[in-house]
Length: 381
Image (cartoon, rainbow, N blue to C red; front, side, top):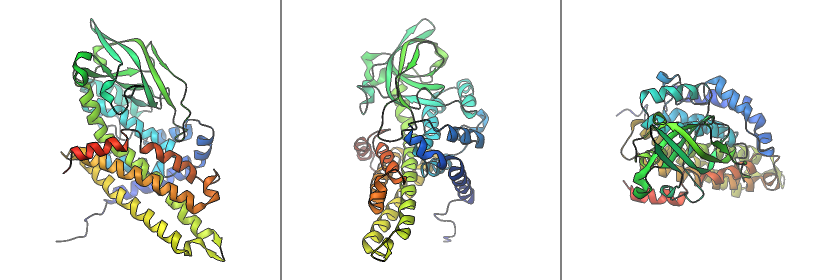
């Protein structure tokens, strides 16, 4: 057996990583501190991603996109998150918002909205509510049939890039008597009468990505806005997360890698007791453990991305597993990076404290890691 190509990424992915890293360093990283400090949307990253075709690279070629596969999207998000977590949410949210359309929509619907997404109109995902977080099936937003139309009332909580995105996948209850089997998915546009947004949440991390409530007040849309079969919306929402949790793992990977890179460099620059702190075994062991954890999470995440692309039957296990591992790794690695930098790590002169704050959310959204462990246990190989 030849081992020449086993566990080696095809060169096209290495070339992609190099190009994304160059773009991220030149056009995104210089603004990352201000984006976080000022709680402002990373417009510079937004513009750079549109210009480079990375705003929604997953959109199929037939709908005007680049047709990037799941592994390519992982690498894109990972490299952006390495310098700015908030900016990495742009392609991640666009994929999350549009995957339900890609999985459930018809050809006319896909071309209608995906072609606009590819040109720079964002797509957000509206599932969570004030009383429906981990128990997503408990949602109260209703869609009632009125003739040929649907009238939607309710609100959605914790919606990433709300107010920025032009399109929203909305998961709504169409028959409360059926519970999760009475839920249906729709696409709502920001311009639809009755759509409004709450004030941006004041968050610990990802401060550059606006998180807001979305309100629906008698929003009336035709049936061609429905992208799932009636009553199949919850299943579509869960299938979507099986694919998109991998992007959260990618985001966590990037945050961990960025913090590790800063800590490693600092360990050679900082001198105490007459030598680099890297020369102390305690620091060496910390860096070694950080590197092991990052690479372990990367291998699992890349494997999950390949399974997503193929639609493997064990995707649910791998998706939940990589999200759980990578986000736990990110939290540990960024915390250790702060420790290695000491007092400098605790202030915003260095990016590791921002990366630590950002990493916390990766353990929470798209399903808490406690919920992920339940999913993993129920889908053990």
